[in-house]
Image (cartoon, rainbow, N blue to C red; front, side):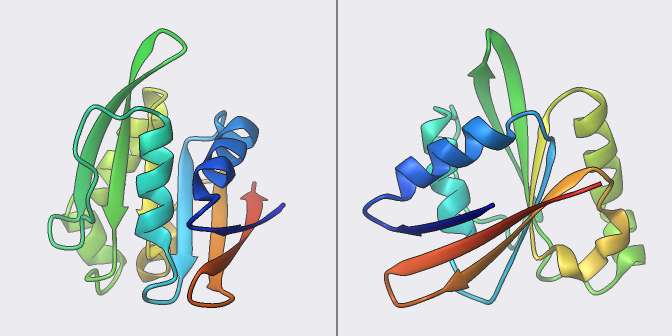
Length: 146
């Protein structure tokens, strides 16, 4: 699946994305610096009416957001692995445990910069590659990885 969007229609893209893929629990967002990974996640969280402030977890590594979906309270663990050097550091930081817990409890992980520790991304997951087409337009290639 591929989505092309601008800031003017990013909310519609986020809604379409969620309608198609909400049964999945792990989402790996890949793309160059400033490609729009955090921006897309922010708009997706707004669409889901997340109760918490959504921000980049670059320094905290994990932000936790709460929302209600189908009558249940759900959690999104928003991770940014940009500063992670390798798999061992990711494990020592508790990232693997967080993913395992999220999947086991039916919650969600949105992972930016998954390239830093691919071995920790469980299958199935959704791989999202965001590319900048122009200063205002993005394309997102979405692939289900089993």
